[in-house]
Amino acid sequence: MHVAEAVGRALVDAGVTHAYGVVGSGNFHLTNAMVDAGARFVATRHEGGAATAADAYARTSGDVAVLTVHQGCGLTNAMTGITEAAKSRTPLVVVAAEATQPGSNFFVDQDALARAVGAVPLRVTNAAGAVDAAREAVARARSRRTVLLNLPLDVQGAEVPDIGGVEAAFAPDGPAPEAASDADLAVLVDALLAAERPVFVAGRGARTAGSAAALEALAARTGALLATSAVARGLFVGNPYSLDVSGGFSSPLAADLVRESDLIVGWGCALNMWTMRHGRLIGPETDVVQVDDDPTAIGAQRPGATGVVGDVCATAADASAELERRAVPVRAGRRTPEVRDRIAARVRWRDVPYDDTSSDGQIDPRTLTIGLDDVLPRERVVAVDSGNFMGYPSMFLDVPDERGFCFTQAFQSIGLGLATAIGAALAQPDRLTVAALGDGGALMGSAELETVVRLGLDMAVVVYDDEAYGAEVHHFGPHGHPLGTVEFPPTDIAAIGRGYGFEAVTVRAPADLDVVARWVTGDRERPMLVHAKVTRGASWWLEEAFAGH
Image (cartoon, rainbow, N blue to C red):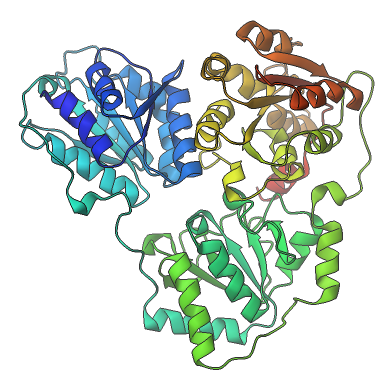
């Protein structure tokens, strides 16, 4: 067996079930070996789409995914998606063919590319160590890291012995999570006991099995309200004391309740400028505690926070047990009927009154999204691109749980939303996937419309079209700057969708959504593209973001 084949088989033996990529000469044999070993390979039309689809699959399924790319340009095409994954600590293995001769047109310093974006570089240097390198890459990825495994062209054809089975150390379940030390646990429990108005803000690190239940149990004992960062949206769906998302996406009531807290506990959450509105959600007398299994994450975004190093689920469960051991009675905190009723009535954005700005030929994005929320199935996955529009689908479309929201925004790149939806759809094939895009991001990623059709995905693609890069319009326009570089003529995006094989409708008024409603109840043999001509206006979250600069 050659190195390329052995590495492909070893990745699958280590538990990888899905690989994404664009196949060239450098990753041809490796990719075929993964398929032969039982993995599903998803071919996209661009490496950037493959990287983001793999990222979204991994974060939605919780499993390690693989991205395979050609040497040099295949890797550089994928770098934006890889950067997003690395910043998000997505469990992803990128296997890149590598030209090691400086005279090659394909030569770049691939290790340097990985380090520059926060990924972990590894390399297969010889046939004898090829299988171990593949196993190490998967093991590193399971610790929530994005790993670049370089596979040099001059090594790929070397012969290796039979790889056999995979050692127990690389079993899919990985090592058991570690709870906080006794000293750190005492700090956390004492902070909870000293607080009268605590709130828990759960982030990416809380999207693990059992974490939601453990946090809800601890919150019920201590009288804490519950919120999430954007990436963990849906974690506490159905809890009457859930504020939904904390930060720029917060409804006015949610922001007020977070701001009034005397203790904020971030659970696997960086408490960054978005989640805390540039610190404006933290009162002058509010204590802040961060629970994270990565010591380097504590205080990185929120200097002065008290650190508790430990796994979210295990630490929350241990804190509840410690309160029980101390015989501390259950505390009501702000868990009163009055607060519960306020949350039920006003925590969702769709329940906040607004002036509908719809006009001839254009629909208010709030009205559009509320209408979509009403007609689309409840069992859904919402995948959102970046841009001025993004708050509307993120907060006006309900989601069933944390696996129902996929938010690739750590790098704030537009153009990733459609590929995000592809990966999320493959991880949750029993749900309708909703891809929410701006016109700029939709046109950037339009090649992957073919991938959606080819794979037969159950998907609705919604394009919020304001004929501009809206964030720039609202950032620079009020200061009198010329906007010709960020405004565009009308584009018939519905026609583009039909050309790829979508059903499509252009929406200018609520009645136009009847076409979507009929599609939902029909056979849905083809995906739907909703081209919405939306009114312009700075979204509330963008105004919050600008206020912090």
